[in-house]
Image (cartoon, rainbow, N blue to C red; front, side):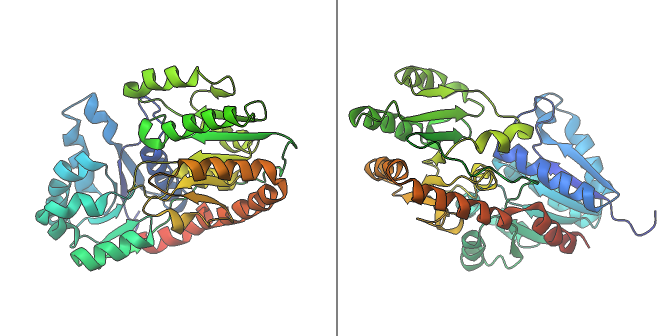
Length: 344
């Protein structure tokens, strides 16, 4: 059909193994958003590299045939594949729109002048945070930056419910030491010490890092009030999370972008307790939609914030309402408007 742009989404969708993490969920959501807006949308799942080495030529062929490339790379893809994509974009007049996943791009580019030169010459770079946009503009002169927040598809109204005398906490992310498992286990020690281990419990959901399995199970088994429930499928996400009171994400990744689990918490109507990672204050209103504790040496404050939520249910219930209200900033409806302007 004349006039319809051919759009290709290129990124790690994880369809072969149904891998679910921040990278795959965002890439799938962007693809779904585009399918709803356009008639000619294709995808290439870079997970195929692990199974069919020569499939890279299929990827290049698809790039040559598209008019708009929606690009969501991880580190290695940006390092090794992007230069070839840049060359093809110039030869075949392909518009590249790079949607950044996470908050690592500025540090990644610090010793890569060629990548900086190329990225400044693509059609657009869409960061999850205002801070990243500002840093890349000021440090590298990248004035093709825009902000495109992480988003979710949802039509969900959580029940605003809290069990008096109980507090149900949840961790939902990759089960990885760097996501702050140590702080949650230290919280367990604190709850025992103040005799709250029968009144506060912690549930874990998420795919598990192979390298952290032994550490996780060794520590989890110390606490009868902590339990791991495996991976939480997207279709069960919000109806499950709404049964909790607050989400724990004391991440040790300083360059996190916008963790998708925070968006999922807001949609489910629960506040979050997070460490002050680089972009925390953009997404968590301290004392309103959650609590922010120090990135370094924040254990004592994390313990106290949990106790506040237990001791003062009126504070918790007010935060639940504010968390739900904040979810509208990350809705697909808002993202659709932004995407139409990008692909027009």
